[in-house]
Length: 123
Image 1 (cartoon, one colour):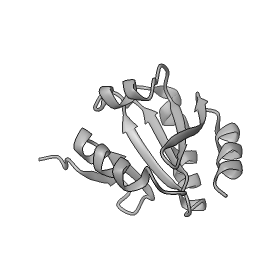
Image 2 (cartoon, helix red, strand yellow; image 1 turned 60 degrees about the vertical axis):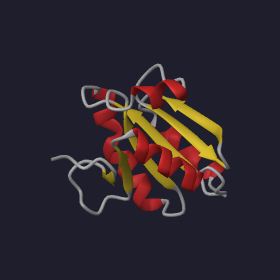
Image 3 (cartoon, one colour; image 1 turned 180 degrees about the vertical axis):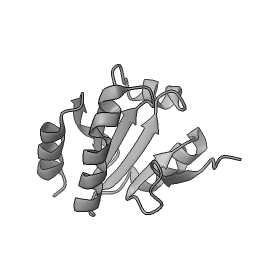
Image 4 (cartoon, helix red, strand yellow; image 1 turned 45 degrees about the horizontal axis):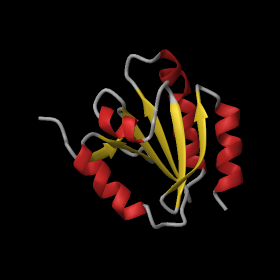
């Protein structure tokens, strides 16, 4: 039976990316980070999305590189209501959150733009 809480993304047991698989898990994760000054990067993607699969290795590499940033992955098909709350209209969409507010957004598999925003906002 599948795990309903959070688990590392994809097959890597030691991935620094937290995959959220239920609304309860998302709500718990959000509550624990919304007041944090730590940057959180939410990757809204889908298993069928080619560009999402293309950028996934780069997203994991950024998560390993920027250990002071929280990296989260949400499948829009699993958690469509969460995606709607964040007004996600295309995949992949990366929402950058700090202190409970959106501070940046990158739509599309734009690795360089995403990394630049992370660099700017993580301090």
